[in-house]
Length: 243
Image (cartoon, rainbow, N blue to C red; front, side, top):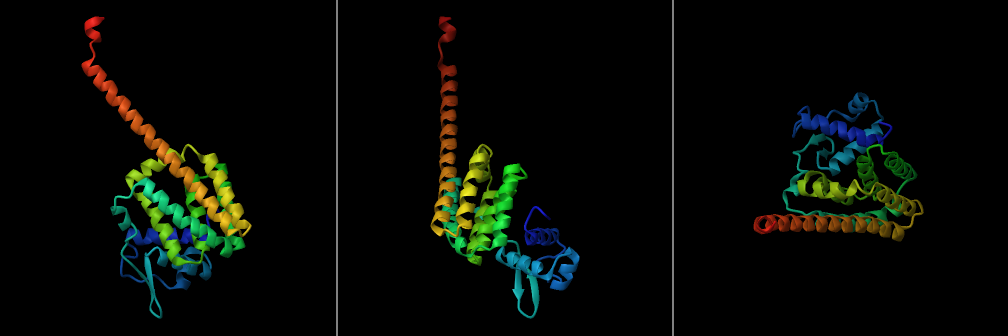
């Protein structure tokens, strides 16, 4: 629990219970007080978790009635054929503006949690999870549920599309130090409450990523050409006649 912001852990646990069938679609979650007792956290933490689950479209809050589980639709966007390039460009545009807005609204607690993710990246404590939490904290700090939902859906595409996962895996694992440096620049801009610098730092981060994707794509294409050329040479070579 100490490695992640508390309410996100509660979100994960409730989602697990929903996915396991304990709370099926259409059912009502236990009252706030009961959830707080079950998870041994405060009621405000439960409220934060419910807000996040509502943004993720896992539950619907009906005033005066309770919190009801929805059908899971978070993977629907993945059905579209979105390339890693399209996804990265979209993330740059959305998360750049999210960072600019967050610079004016982020809390001290969120800055502390943001810095913790940098420490986890530096120490190699599940850097991918720390990376995701870093971006999630920023989108949460905007105080705009639509932005948080947009960023969440983009992350769902990254984690669920086989082609995108493969493309990202090829470049992210080779640039941990550069990624950390870029995240620190974003953090510094947010800490300074500098919206323009936060936007620029986020754009630089994604610009490096998309260029790395292009380089990897070019290298793969070149390797394919070499392979085809080699196969053609072997097929039509006269070496066996002149040797």
